[in-house]
Image 1 (cartoon, rainbow, N blue to C red):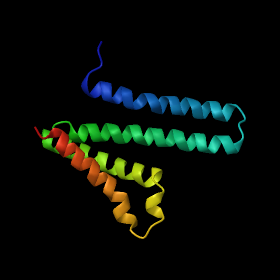
Image 2 (cartoon, helix red, strand yellow):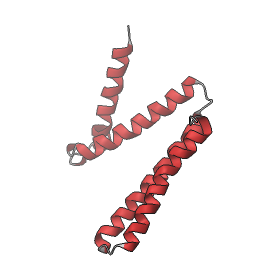
Image 3 (tube, rainbow, N blue to C red):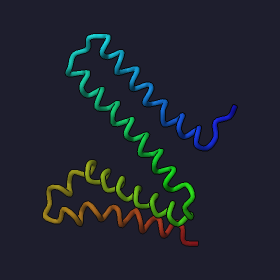
Image 4 (spheres, rainbow, N blue to C red):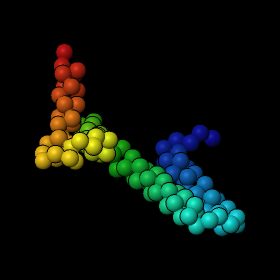
Length: 119
């Protein structure tokens, strides 16, 4: 029996939840310092929420035209690129033009993408 469609998405979405639940039971059975247990449980809950979000997003976008899918992909890439630039480049936080310095690499990336696609 091959997993396709709804059953595949449900199974893939449930597997991390089952693993997190088993890990939570194991953590309760074995005494673990609270300093270690608390971040582990927060990480596990975050993974479950991520999988649920991805599953809902898949079902919401599944039948949409390509322009909607590519628009959402571009929006996601923009947000991730902004987070990466903000966290990895410390210089923008030191000057007066904080917003411009953080957004400039994103415009450069977009310009490079347009030039690379142009025939």
